[in-house]
Length: 190
Image (tube, rainbow, N blue to C red; front, side, top):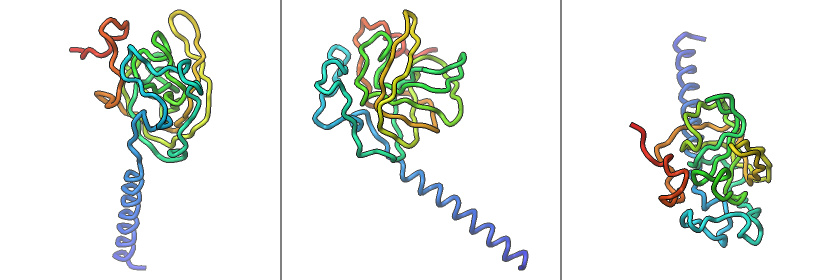
């Protein structure tokens, strides 16, 4: 086999690899929190009227199966479950800051348990992030350590081997009232 032919074959294989990566990126569904709940379920308009599990007839356990086993990207707020200092090995992705700790817990179909492909360096609790990975519906319980004790939080979805990236904002976030103890998280740091 000539050197020129080998070079052309290597170049062609490289183009196929890049093209297949582009196709994989095109297959990512950019979703919003509303996509994880049944269309008939109430939406949280603001933190004065949160969509919490206790107020729903099914306690928020009805999951959307439309996205099962699909690669999705979802933006939300990261609440560490398993961490060592700034290094986070697993976290809950939630639709608003303060969720699960000192604000009402969202229903399970609005909580995603995320295991990053690589440990994620988190600057602050409830850091806005975008998660990309394969969505798996199924109830999971996580033990969450908060300042005043331990809380068990049930999530309706998991994304394992997730790619995690910081984002500036979450497009469909719930707005917190001014007197919320978590309002300081919304301020930009200088």
